[in-house]
Image (cartoon, rainbow, N blue to C red; front, side, top):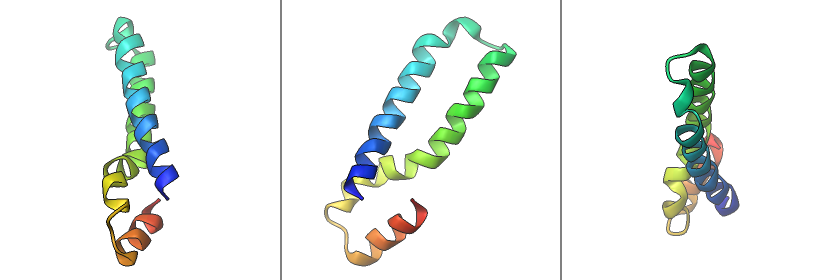
Length: 71
């Protein structure tokens, strides 16, 4: 589970960095909105792991099972 949390953290940081670094030239175009939607879906899927990674090392079995269920 800790590996997935680390991957979620790296994924979230790199995707948002890539989006705001490279997509600034296409603002308010269909291409920009398509990628923005993909970034939002990526965030919905990976952000829970990104925010839960500090808890995983100190959490009890119930918390880890709940996080694993949502992962």
